[in-house]
Image (cartoon, rainbow, N blue to C red; front, side, top):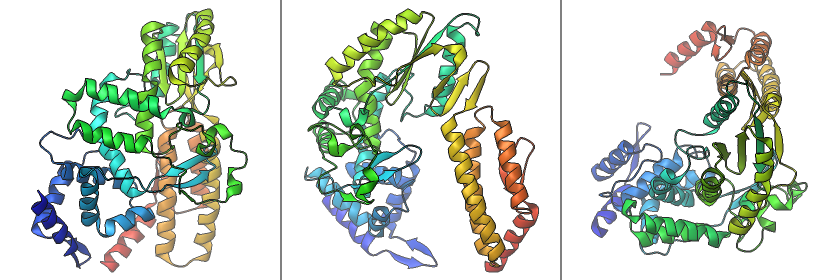
Length: 454
């Protein structure tokens, strides 16, 4: 094994550029082809794969949407050497996470983010690939976050179905209750979390595709790493003003808090709250219940039963998970009033776009229209205009893809028609205004430019 690793590392250092493409040795190309064949996101790793292959798999998963970050580019310059070095650290149990970078984002809401080094993201994916197949079957169906085939759209449709089913197609009374956990990620008890994960892994270790001590080592290193130690602050300290202390790791109690943004944090958040999911479904016997991260929703015909469940759920969270219900985020209304959930406003017979998504859509599109229109008027460089338009089109279509999932024809029509009018001759759209396309003239000019440069 050591000789094989040395060969991979030596071959990786001998790589060179040839006609714009990276050319690797025969051993390296064989390894890359093998890894690419298995690079389906979050694939379950088979028993006969070695740790080095598992790390390569995790590397391809990690780089899927992070190839332009500084730490990712730095890692990729000598990625084979770096992966082999990471293997040695994990195999010898000397791996230690590197310092985080922290900053504040303002949209969609003000939030503190701790970004891990790309090398540590590979380890996060390695952990996910190992333990997700163990925990995912344990979760209830209506836990929507960070799960294959679930997500926000699935959650919205499930809640819409819950309302229809509970009210028998809107003919009977039904009530919707939403609950939220105050400062959830900052309040997770690390010791309690590790004990839950350790007990479940040991219990189901026959399903584990790696050494037990290896995965426990990696999970422990990841959970008990303090992101605030030696972290690099990327934004001005004034940016933290207005952020509640319950939403910052800098003010979390010792032994508590996970960084928002890590893949493992999302998985661990699901694992930690699986106990309350099971309690509400199995003990309290609520048929219509779902959860996305820390947003819980319950639907029932009996309003009083929902009211009585609040202190029971509150006590369970406090006594068993050291968590606290947010006192100002308890919502209880008749289904006819509708409910905001996961960026959508769900009402009888229709699903509307949430106010936050609509506001962000308008603001971002109008800003980009102005910038693009100025560039179109001032620049004579066709390539600059085309690539600016291409990026703008991607932005618009990403929003349109979200809006198409709800009753949003009027919104799509108004914005797309405005884009076509202001940027005349650049874009066209079909009758449903669901996708923005380049006009035939722009597409033809682009094809001609591509042929000239080829």
